[in-house]
Length: 278
Ligand code: C2E
Ligand code: CA
Ligand code: CA
Ligand code: CA
Image (cartoon, rainbow, N blue to C red):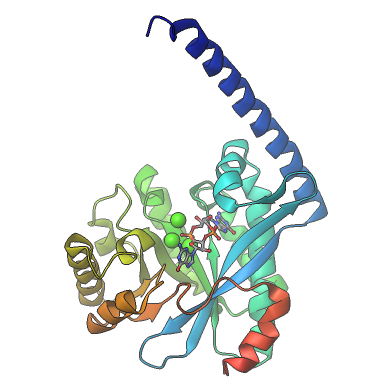
């Protein structure tokens, strides 16, 4: 450690500096993307196990920047949350997704569009207003919109959160808890919050065939949800082994690479016809 001392310090400063510059660059480029509305959404199908039909698509943000290239959401959503830029980004995502949902509705497709909502966005005082306004503007029926929130959002301010959820329910929006099982909140919230669906986190789904702990967790989540009158969807379904386990446990819906990767909008029409989505 003697010879490591000063250089470690040096590297630390450089890393910090580098991290800071990277953050600033990201922030600048994000601002540009917001201004130019250049975010794209890709859509990953969600399948009903009983009917084997597509029942919805989750909208996933895609950002290609001229300078930075493709930046995955995991790499910029946090920065967007820290800088507050997630608010305008989230509005654009909601708008784009609801427009797409309205297209499907107009074409007679009986499917939902799922939108990821960041905790920062969910807690923003204008959130409910912007959901209402977007539904009015696009003409999408509320029950066609599925809002995905993570359970950690329920930790911060229970009352405010309950209030927002109840307003969403009153509007008629579908509510899913994303990444279920990975959060820090206690299960008791499920008793009081009006939630429609639990989304089993992909970390429990990946090695379902071999990992007995994952099997126990997944089985319990499905039973819990059903006992409480909720549906369950498994995400990250990559193998038929995982699928078989989930089917045996009567998981309601599936989503994952085994079925399809997220689909860019220009490829959706072909996908919809080929898969006879009605
Ligand atoms: P998430 O909401 O849990 O989304 C699931 C992620 O897993 C997506 O990654 C999806 O492409 C990927 N995935 C789907 N099926 C499989 C599979 O079978 N195997 C594996 N290994 N991965 C699969 P993506 O699109 O990179 O998004 C990452 C995260 O970024 C999302 O996790 C979500 O938390 C966030 N995110 C994405 N789009 C948005 C958005 O529009 N708004 C907000 N606030 N967050 C978003
Ligand atoms: Ca999600
Ligand atoms: Ca998830
Ligand atoms: Ca996630």
